[in-house]
Length: 196
Image (tube, rainbow, N blue to C red):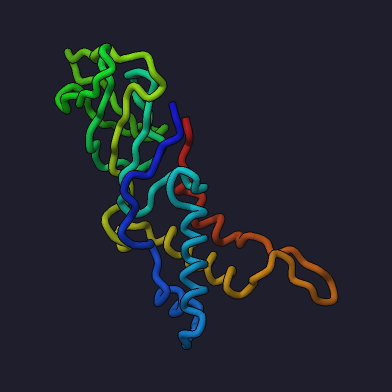
């Protein structure tokens, strides 16, 4: 399985500059660009394939390529709401689209996966590392309101901490390393995926 690629990015972030300013009681606009940059960093830390949750927050489309048609075809992100399409290279190395009636999307304890429909057969594929590409829509929903409240609150706390402590070490009479908030870890802990 190759590294997945982002095909269509989400249209908005799970939290906004106004959300952060309300949560952190910031009443001026001078730091709005900085706050947006901190939001981007916090969201990058938790969202998507490289994020610590192994989840997409707001709907986005990803492509995952395989060397063949395995069963099950495990998808690297959750939750998955739909399969946009499955393309494959046939034995002549010509790209084809797999009939949607031949497969189904399921989710188990290890996450979303695709299995062959009863009585269906997988076509033969050309020998190449990207013989099959699944395009899938993943995320909790189309906008920030669909993201679980605990994830949104954790992001607000992360951005608040990043805004208040702009260095990784606070120097005073004793140098102290800035730690990740235990509350942030607690809020995110039940959303971390079990990766197969």
